Structure formats: structure tokens, C-alpha cells
Length: 414
Image 1 (cartoon, rainbow, N blue to C red):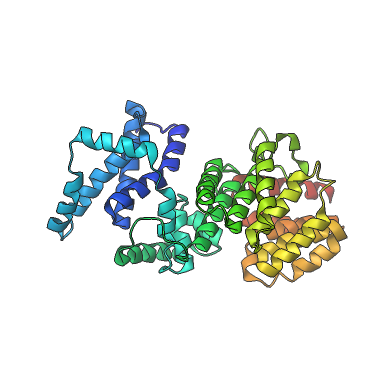
Image 2: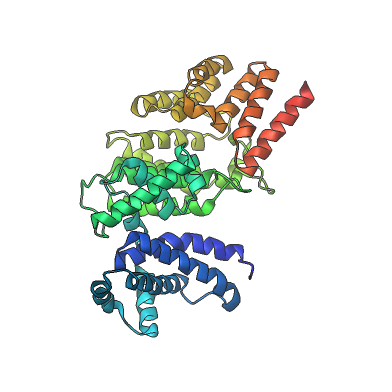
């Protein structure tokens, strides 16, 4: 089998939700469309390294997936009715390619696919799991990590969600205003972005393709809903955080903490755009969690150095965020901010309140933050144990590498 170049893998990953969306829009049958899309991807990994990239890779994939879905539909019991519907697309091979070329040049169904997966008839957890799989391209393992649940639970949610969509006959189109999907869509986009910001597994810390795709979809959503403050806040948040991505790793891929990053490598244009967006959004209200997180990111990005960061303002913003969205991750970040203003002692006291939360027991960052504060507090032995706990829960190679370096450093000091 030919080796798949990394640029081809990246292209296929980026095109997958667009192809799935196009096939679902044309034929319906979400579950079968997903199977057909996967088979088209397999065909591409076999043929493209051998024959070269087609003129329009997206159109090629849509054509192959459409033909495969035709075969799958014909195999089902209601053959006559479905074949009458498929006759609308029964054109010659050249005709299909030309039609798909036109479709590929001007239509992107990814956002519509996202809204479809977030149909209000599905439980929120199922909406998110299905969309992360279909739109974000995340594996079951990555989704389970993002949602802090088991892989078996994620698999069940996705299976049931597909069946519910199949049974519902949901039309493939953007929903009407007030259709109840926007909150789930925003959360899914944020989770996709977070997986790009810090990959759950693998050898690389970042998956810029996922972060870029989340930003692209957020831009489309913002263009549709320019007056929605939380949509604006989410786009601003993504831009402000992603602006730092070039400085977050060294030449060898190693993790670089924010305090040690070369801020000259931060994307000033993205920062300016993000600041302008959140500045415009905040006065419109009501103020939601994405706007508050964007405001916090803006304070970080506008500081000329780690030492000049306005941690008092960040602490105040986290306290407002806790009133809006009281979850353990926000509480963890608040503890960090408090420690930067008042010292490690008060920060550790806040962390003690989180120790009984079962969601934090296997949370790598909780143990890493605790280790850092314990070391600042003058307890290297306890800090070492906390770093070791963090390393046990780390699943990304670069995070493991960074934590191992801290463990070795403390070993050498004791």
C-alpha cells in the first residue's frame, strides 16, 4: 500500500465534513451518507498517492461517495421508491463530475451539517458527541476526553443520535430563528477548537487544522448572526487564543508555557480583530461565558510581557464568569488567577475545594496546577507527587514530555 503523504491526510481531514454535508443534503440518510463518505476517503487514500490529486478533490470525493450511497440505497428494501428519487441524479459519469465541480466551487454544507447534528430532538450530550464526530472529525477517544466521559458512553450517544436523525426526517437546511440549536452549536465549535488548541493524544501538542476549521465555521455563523453577542464572543475568543499558537511550541514541538513564550511571535492581526470583536460585543449584552472568556484572553494578549499581565482584572473577570458558568475548569482557572494576585496559598485553598469533584480526579491540568502552586509555596515533595499524578493522566506526548521534565528537575533538586 502506498504511503499517504501528510498533506493528503490533512486535506482529507479538512474535506470530510464538507463532503458528508453535501451528500446528506443531496440524498438524506445521515447514517448511510457517513458510511459512503468513509468509503470515498478509503478510495482516495488508495488512488491519490498513485494517480495524483484530482483537479477538484472535494468534487471527486462527493462523486465517489454519491455513487456508493446510490449502491447502499438500492440494497435496501424500498428499492423502487428510492430509485425514483435517485433518478434525479442519474447522469453520466462526466455529468456527475461537472455537477459536483459546480457544487464544490460555491457550496459548503459543513455549517448546515453542524446545525442538523444539533437538532433539538436530540439530548444535548448526543448533539455534542455526534457533531464532534461528524463535523470535527474527532475520534471516539478524543470525544470521550473532551466530554470527560467513557468511550462506551460516547459510542452509545453517537449511535442513538444517528438513529434519531434517521427516524425524525429532519430536513437538511439551516433552522429557522429560535430553533433551539445555537447553544449546542457554539459549545461544539468551542470543543472542536479546544481539541485543536491542545490535542488529546498523539505526538503533537496542536492540531491547527481543527482550530482553523472551528474559526472558519465561527466566522460563517457570525456572518449569519452578526448581532448575537455570544456568537461574536466565541469568534473573538478563538482568534485571541489561536493568535498565540506559533509561540506555544518550540522547534522540536515541545510545549512552551505562556509565561515563557516569545510574544513577538503572537499574531497581532488576529489579536486586533479579536479585541475589536469583543469590545463591540460586550456593551450589547447580555454578557455570556464566551464573551467573558474572550475578555480574559484579551487581557493576556494585550500585556507586553508575562510580568505586566493585569491579573487583578483577570481574577475579577473569572469571578463574574463563575456566576455565569460555575464549572470546575473555570474554578481551576480562577484559582490560578488568585494565586498570581495573592500568592500560592490562597490558590491552593481554592484547589482544595475542587479535590472532591470527581471530574477533577483524572484531570491532568488540575494536578499540574496544584504541583506548580505547591512548588511556589515551598513544598517540593508534594509538588513532585502532584506532577507525577499529572503525568499519569496526560495522554498527549508533548504534555507528558513537559511534565516529565518538571519531575526530573524536582528530583535533581531534592
